Image (cartoon, rainbow, N blue to C red; front, top):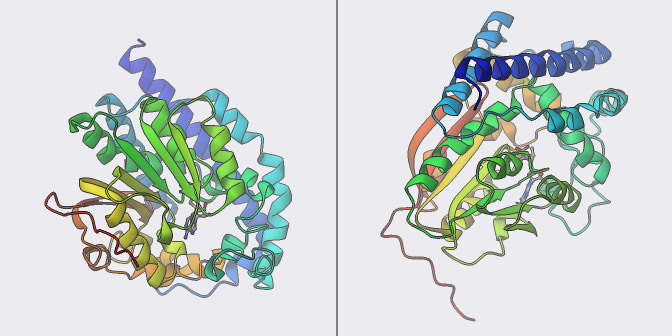
Length: 353
Ligand SMILES: C[S@@+](CC[C@H](N)C(=O)[O-])C[C@H]1O[C@@H](n2cnc3c(N)ncnc32)[C@H](O)[C@@H]1O
């Protein structure tokens, strides 16, 4: 194995390159948008300075590196995967004017009619993105867009959600533990998890068939993966069948009632003693220096349920479903909240009609 110094150098070089590459795409998108960004309502809180942003990014990477060194996951440097994703650069830039145009005319309901059969709250152009979550083209662009939005830090924030899962897997006596990713998107998180634990049984659940198709591709080298196209509020999974569940950047896109329904479903499918890891945008009170971003994000990115999410009492939401918060971690712009289903909790038995 390479020495720690060599590994640290590889890690630092990879992260700096990512931040420079995706940060440049973020700035390019802003330059194309010009007046659109300044036209957004004035935030109630100040926006963070560049120094604050860079310092918080550094903290994120330092923690990430510590987790690698602690053996929680392998060195996250995968040049082939990075190059594959980076190839979407021209596609991303070509799409920016369409997103900006939608943003200017508040065109967030282009997919409403097309997506029949899917819940109404879902049939929107979240982030003003082309085709919402409904096409292959949207799925092809998604990872690049997210990394550009977070200037190359998205994967490092997602990795933090794996820490409590790795700890659970290390201590569990279950022979074949199961991990469920709710709103798996294009499979970035599960691809990372499988790189760390290739034999772990994993389930990717998402409402979008085209996004699930990307997960299939991302995980094609691995066995023991199941793909489910279904709403998180009605998961077709047996009671008490899941050891660990995660949901990353999904809850802020759900209306309040759906959030509560999803929380109940999570509690239902988890085994007693099982964990749920919520990795979501920071909320008011979590990181005061970034509250200006919480103010502007929903209107800039068409996030209709984000403002209410940012004020949601998570303890109350999940306690209502029978889950108890046991830990919280802030990873730059993401909060990782760990919930447990108490041991004595019997699975709810469905009544026969
Ligand atoms: C912002 S993306 C996050 C994707 C991924 N977790 C990530 O880390 O990038 C939200 C994802 O949640 C999915 N989604 C939204 N509402 C859902 C629901 N009710 N049930 C299942 N999936 C849902 C969307 O299709 C989309 O893939």
